[in-house]
Image (cartoon, rainbow, N blue to C red):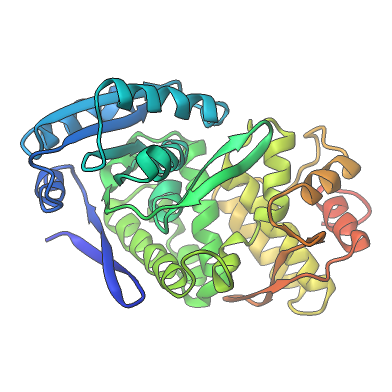
Length: 369
């Protein structure tokens, strides 16, 4: 039997997260959505499609009356309104109507873009997520956040649009590069830091099998991260309160990601931003520098960056980019800080001096590491 987590909204079940180690049950799960007389368009990118499109297509043949595909070049730089426009045109030319459905097959870029297209085409059609990266399996596929980048601004255009199903095949982890796999660990460690101290310590204890991609251990890890995100999303589906805690590490992380022209993967930038936020938390006396050192060691042990030294980033540029992020509210930077390991809170009082100190620390400036 597959592991199944049901996501609710206002107490009503709205979709399931299904975890399997193959695509063998995909046909059954999609068939349960009542698409026998409908069309499905599989949206994927040039990295994922050669690996999994044929398998997914074969599984879905019996579920619906027609399958199409839309493949775009891989990369964050393709997550734009131009690509969405091309997808709209494909759907229009193939006469997709409100009863039809999109299938996001890939990582976060594919899921975000496909979800946004589904949210806006004909004012909203159904879609499902088939996440193929660790990061998308624990983060972007869950919760209904969709969006695309606008110029150099990450996820600046978007909508909340819940999927009808998330089908996670953990075996896809075996095809990831070391960098992509580590990127997912950035979000997973974040979950422990903001919500579950026991989980954070379990991750450290299971480092060897996690890095060896032991699928049983990986599945157990993904389930816990999914449960954490499910609980937060259920309580705050449109990010009016607690869901903001999931942005731990993202305030500075997005700035670094943008200034590096998306050459650093998202989870790597989240790790850097989380470390800076932990340092700020220590400066305020909430946690100790020994705890910051432990967080740094944990990120480092999972092959994540812990410094921006040598990245050709300027202090003033990082501050400026942070103040242009969509997480600004009424001219105030919204930071997520730690009161303890496993407990985070939203703070709107971080000063420019504190922000400069945290960035200088990441740069390897006047603060000893």
